[in-house]
Image (cartoon, rainbow, N blue to C red; front, side):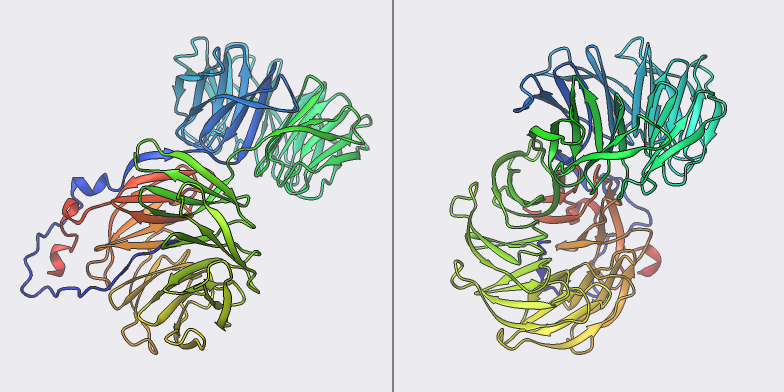
Length: 627
């Protein structure tokens, strides 16, 4: 959350030459424009064929060599437009469920150089895929089950569909039936004897949300989120009956069957191994800590492969289910949650506990040039001089030497009492938004030995801070905007506040106005010309949630998580006007502005680089009836 402070005098309309337009010009509709992406993220899904694993990492399909299970090695990758949700590998092709971008067919005959050869943009969001014969069966979210001919992999064609009542998450195919995990609508059994006319023949509404499915013999195994593992007899496909269940503890995300053992990817409760020898009385016989959050699991050739969010691809030996062991892993990129940029380098705070350096000097082809471990997940970054300052939740403030910009070196640390979420640096002081411990003022004149010199315990949860003109402006979650006099950094004191209607997550300044990213209540414009009496004077609360905000010139750029990036004309701060937007493939958590670039930390989809919206490109957006 690196924000531009700009002290400007907004001209009055009188005496100003304005170009007035009544509708959005064409130029604005292309603004902001995508320039490039560094698209790597956490491990969400995995498929195995022979000695190759196919791992979804952000919007990338990784091809990983498993010939030495203890040391998986990357062979190649292919960048896709959306976050990889599911994958099925068969022969020389991998079939990818690519979210809003539908089914993607990848030629993997040369593992070191996988290439996309076919596309079918399904009407929903492709979450899962199974292949049988010359057909791919896609679990397409709200658009149900789609049946796609892949007789010609370079030209996939839909031949039939069934609009299931829920949201199709995963699909397994056995014989003439497809078994669909349909979220709130449980298990749907679909006859695919005629692929052009799939027909539901039976269903069972499980108690939770069916998000994973595996079929073995006459039993279907459902990963049912909070309701754990459900075991369903499908001996009569028209009349599925639950015969047993096991409460796994967290949230069952996926399931695979290996002999008499069900392997459940149970989110934050790791991998659970359930003996299903007696389906009516399943019992847990072992578990394996795979890292952070087990999201997907497959069993192949005597080994178990888990896509574990932070920890990447985990290879385990579960031949003795009571004592499974990790034998190898391949670490994926993780979640990009914060970014700051200078001189063509983007510094990206990544969970788990990493600071990555991405060269964006060629915006169309960002490339990682450095990385360093952090004490905790960086939530905010500030660059000042030759140092980077990271707010790292439970680890407080960490300081990195950037004398070699591509090789940050940790040199200082202060464990703040709260949860460090935001940081701003002015002169010899760092101002830390420290969660439930408010604002902490830290002397960083000796970067190797930071020391707290003052604090104000704000009433909310301090998420972000910006400092200008002797005042700190704190986005304090449910307690809104807090204004703190830091003229004497050793004796900060609150002088004013405004309780915004949402949850204040970010803040930027333009002239005498603070722009607050107020989560589900949009952007609030607050006159702070009198710090002791701030007043809301405008807002932009169209359907959009605002979590971070930065200003350049007369434009505000807002990170809206699932809503992507929004651009507002704030030449008249009291009346923000929509300029344009860009829906990123992940979740736009934070953003920064640097030399004409809008650089977005896109959570599970890496880094997105956009071109900014120059004032000259859209002229003025003041409606004609307001002049």
